[in-house]
Image (cartoon, rainbow, N blue to C red; front, side, top):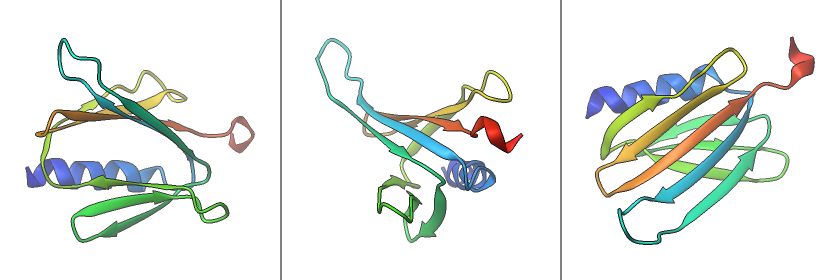
Length: 106
């Protein structure tokens, strides 16, 4: 479990300053669940007790991710400009995160 927490923190810290798109999904098989999406531009990453925060200082947009209870982290990156991961938690929820770097930063 602790390895997954460290892996998540390291991954997100490496992409600080980029744009984050996060979707939370309730993937209970056979049941219509719910999902929420948030977009954070120019993310600042903060670690706190039990969670990591991805925030946008100018607008106050943010999302928290628990760093405990992580069942598995799947790296779904498909290339330099398609960075993504899915975090599956023991409670049945999953978070899909895409990370974007504006094209003008090349």
